[in-house]
Image (cartoon, rainbow, N blue to C red; front, side, top):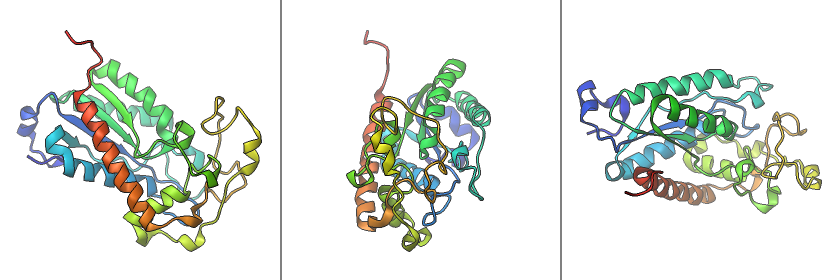
Length: 257
């Protein structure tokens, strides 16, 4: 049986196990500085999901939903070309997709989030879907964004959250044809390090737009990016995603009887 949702025939949905895990990759179409394409987050989330499902789908009972190419990217609305949905619209889209998933035997739904700007909203959607449709819901990332507690190279001072060395390296590995590395420049708002408690990944978060920092839309330093590093990072993403999905497949919050 295929592991792609849209390649199944209608009668085959009745044969699915309740243990099946549906994965919905969520990308974006937003500016990524002068050196990366708008579809960066989509490429990473969609490719990762496809590779994990191809490698582990039969073992873990994975089923891949069509990836979302547009999401909540209004922090980049200042940049021509950026496509974005409002929070209310994206919540509705996620709820209605979940409603359709819930009409099948599938009981677990994973939001695989490629865009850090969706993180808080997907947590809200995850709980709302759980209540409205009875699905077990999960939010995971290719790698945890620095503003959500993930790490960033020391050279980026903890602020490599957008189009920096890691993201650029992964794109050099996955889609080098779309990268113009010679246009990338270090764009780290170093003055923010003087704030102890307010900042990315610090105790106090703040509402921001990507043109607040006096940069070119990049928040990080892509200049040291390499395809070799990107390959290492991407392979680590695949391995970590497989481990996460194995736990999701077995997860039950209820105590053992």
